[in-house]
Every structure is written in C-alpha cells, then in structure tokens.
Image 1 (cartoon, rainbow, N blue to C red):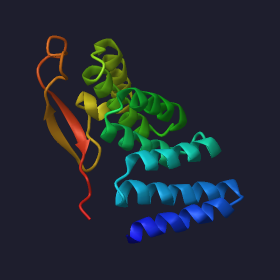
Image 2 (image 1 turned 30 degrees about the vertical axis):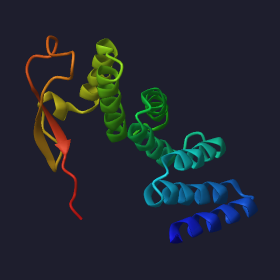
Image 3 (image 1 turned 90 degrees about the horizontal axis):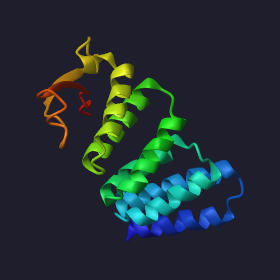
Image 4 (image 1 turned 90 degrees about the vertical axis):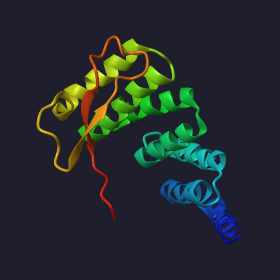
Length: 168
C-alpha cells in the first residue's frame, strides 16, 4: 500500500544519504512509518538501532525504543534502554519518568523489590509532589495500590500525582 511505498522511497534516499544528520533524520522517519503505520515493531527497532550507531545519545530514539520494547514484552532490553536513558537525559521530568518506569519494571517484571524501592526513592527525591508536597500544575491525584509483592512493605495505597494528558 501507500505506506510500504513511502518506506521504499525513504530507504532509497537512505542509500544515497552521506551526512550522519541526514541519515539519522531519514531513519527516524522510516522508524515512524514502520512502527506507527505498518505496525512492524521489529523493523522500527532496526531503524532505531541504526540511529544509535550514528548517535548513541539520541533521546527521541531511546524513548521510541522504550515503547517498542514494552509493546514487545522484552523486559531485559527495556531495562537496558531505561538505564541508558537515565544516563543520557538529565532533565528532572525525564528522570522522574525513567525512574518511575524502572521502579515498576523491577517490581513487576523482575520481582526485585530492593531495586524497585531504590528507583522510587529517586523519584521522590526529584519530585516532591510524590511525597504529598504541592503537586505540579495540571497534575491529578491518583490512588495507587502498592506494587505486586510490596504489599507488606508499602503501607496501604499511596497517592501519586500524575500529569494529566492535554486533550488535543
């Protein structure tokens, strides 16, 4: 169909591209077509890996790969990806997102509650709203039960402030 044809066109342009920035941009478009339009997560991941060969710290690619690994249920790759994001992305909001994801992953996928707690403590140190301080503007309180296996450690449900998604 039309999207396969577009993927072919982008791939031909890629073969001719010489500048790293141009290659990276084309691979990003190709990954979007494969992942969002042709629903081929594996092909999208291949594109993203090629972007990381060019630019190992590419934040958009690292975030896109996180979603693809999660969709695929590849917990090991997801963990490596999140740890890499934690190294690359220094902005506090990103760090909160990354450590919250790691906390959940360690608790639910690996059953490693100590590692999970360490990541949640990182979230608390970065985002006082999670401790019951003033929530960020636009945040909505969500009552969350303790993660699986942590019922005995965490005391009852905790209120977590979740940034409300803007409805476009």
